[in-house]
Image 1 (spheres, helix red, strand yellow):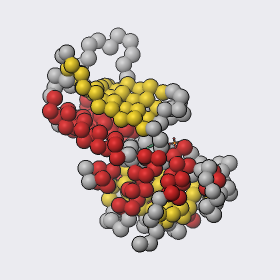
Image 2 (spheres, rainbow, N blue to C red; image 1 turned 45 degrees about the horizontal axis):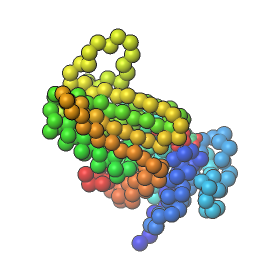
Image 3 (spheres, rainbow, N blue to C red; image 1 turned 90 degrees about the horizontal axis):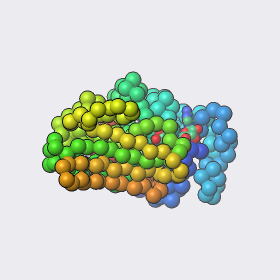
Length: 268
Ligand code: NAD
């Protein structure tokens, strides 16, 4: 079997380093490129050294196209604006684009949808098997428990995270809304502050905590009269997202253009 060449964009970031370690450790894939933003201190350095492992002979560059034309796929955990730009270049280079970035606005989502007419994109707010399985359980629970159970989504992440609620919190909220045949955008309550009045029936509430080095913790609470059910996931290491991203690239290689999710990859 030939090895799949993967470029990591955002190579010096928290996820970028984990992706480089994981691509190096797994069979069937190899690091073919590493990209950082112009001005990054990591430019010109060896990707392996930046990731805290042995030198890999791949220097970090700031020209995505130069790296993409030598690759079969791109692993992208950067920023919404950058990911939209990378999607166009991936479409041009006809390679797989795996997007783990979160925090997209609706315009940016539209642009990714347009790029997916020509490119194979796998995008998910959470690339781990555990969270995607949890989303299925949440959907089932929302369906079975009915309207007299209130749904709240709780999340905690490290102090450096820049978007809230997390992409995973939305993914879980969306699963709960689907279980109830609702649209999350119509039902979600993202902030409560001051005299809010009693909880509106049928809403899905979000609560966000930030601090320390927490990789990611999520819970969906179904609160009824006299009982509560909590479904939760705790990430101990970024490696679970990195492994999921590599699996997504392997699954997507050779597929027809489209916007796929981890549910497609995992067959859930
Ligand atoms: P980070 O800030 O540590 O890393 C982002 C990196 O991207 C930085 O090194 C930055 O310089 C680089 N970057 C930004 N713009 C760039 C560009 N135009 N070209 C090349 N590099 C560029 O952040 P992080 O903690 O690694 O998270 C990154 C993203 O991934 C966030 O949106 C986060 O929410 C998301 N995330 C998703 C999952 C998932 O499973 N889907 C898991 C963890 C994190």
